[in-house]
Image 1 (cartoon, rainbow, N blue to C red):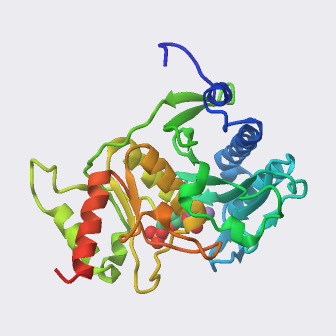
Image 2 (image 1 turned 180 degrees about the vertical axis):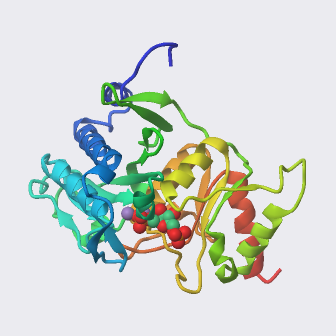
Image 3 (image 1 turned 30 degrees about the vertical axis):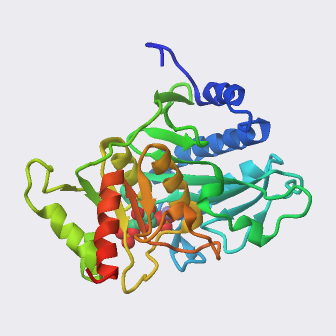
Length: 337
Ligand code: AHG
Ligand code: MN
Ligand code: MN
């Protein structure tokens, strides 16, 4: 990036189109729609306390979770803006039980999965929240898309990213050619390149996990957490604990500084809590593109074959050396060594 130069997200995407032909019209129009959705959600998040859109919507979603008003608003914004184009066949959303088939999407090339608002327990307390998206190519243009076509492995993603509504609002995405981050300049309402070619440190000293569930974690994870707390100056241990309860916010911090985020299986949630299609896969794609790793403790997240839209999986994600160490400690438990 040239000193003092400004590159907007739109300019960046149009440059990418010249370099990588598959980032073509249709995919870039999806980016435009997501970008506009992000600006509209950002506007609502910033003034939510003033216009009575904090708090619960009064219903539970398909996962049995209490929906916040902003969950519902964000879901509607995403669907409305994507439906205005004809670039997506359908949308799988955390907030909708079934697939949303886009009205003009019969001839479209792409399938979208979204967590319209992540970290919704943080909405009412003014802590960081975000939106996550994941884009897949439709397997065949010759026949209609079936539900089975939507259940693709994460390794087939053509694009993924998130928008974090934090102390600043940022758009971070990948199309498989590295990870780039754009900060929203409020005064001109444009996302501007601020974090080009993000690379995550190979190792780190931040541990992000809900330790309240410690007694319920597999022994390998408990052992890892105990190891993180031991003193070893050369290895920068004890590590620092950082956990806000928004995957995006915890992931974003670790992506930039080096660290690991864990949501292990528990007795209450044997497959963990996080959803494969619209939480784990997109974050895994970003992590890997930045040089990090994402695993369920046994295998690469992006190699898991989904069987359900709202499928959950344990998640270990972040700096490669940290993910590998946890996998090893969990593996040695499985093999009894
Ligand atoms: P969502 O708000 O989309 O339902 O996701 C919340 C998720 C995730 O963002 C976060 O890391 C995790 O739930 C926190 O769970 P705990 O409160 O169990 O730690
Ligand atoms: Mn979420
Ligand atoms: Mn959500």
